[in-house]
Length: 174
Image (cartoon, rainbow, N blue to C red; front, side, top):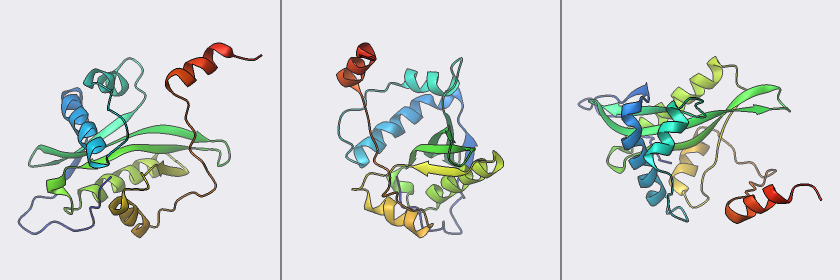
C-alpha cells in the first residue's frame, strides 16, 4: 500500500482510473509481485498471471480490478471483491491490494484509486470498505489514518492454509 498524499504538478498528467481488462493480467501480476517485495511480505508469491486471469475474467469472476494509468502507462492498481455483513445487513467491498509503483508515489494515484473504490462502494449500497494493512507498512498506515480509516482492535484475522486447511477439510465433524 502506498502513501499517495501529494498532488501532481501542473506539468504532470493526472492519473486515470479504468477497469482492468484481460490485456492487463501480466502487468497486474507484476504489480502483485512488486507489492509483496515492497511490503517485504513473508513468503513467496505463488499466484500466477493465469490465476489472476481466472479470478478477474473467468467463467465466475471472484474479484474486480482497476488500473491507474498515466499517459496510458499502468502505474498502479487496486483489486477488490464483494463481501456481506450480517451485522450491517448490507454488502461491502474488501480491498485486497492497492499498489502504486515507487516512481509514481506522491502523485495522488493511490488517493484516486481509493476514492474510486469508495465511490463504487457507495454506488452499490455498501455499508463498508475494508482492507488489511501490514503493521510494518507505516507510510500506508499514516495515509489511511489521515483519511479517518480506523484499525479494528476487536477483530483478530484468522487463517487456515496449506496442510492445516486440508486437514480440517478431511476431518469434518467427529
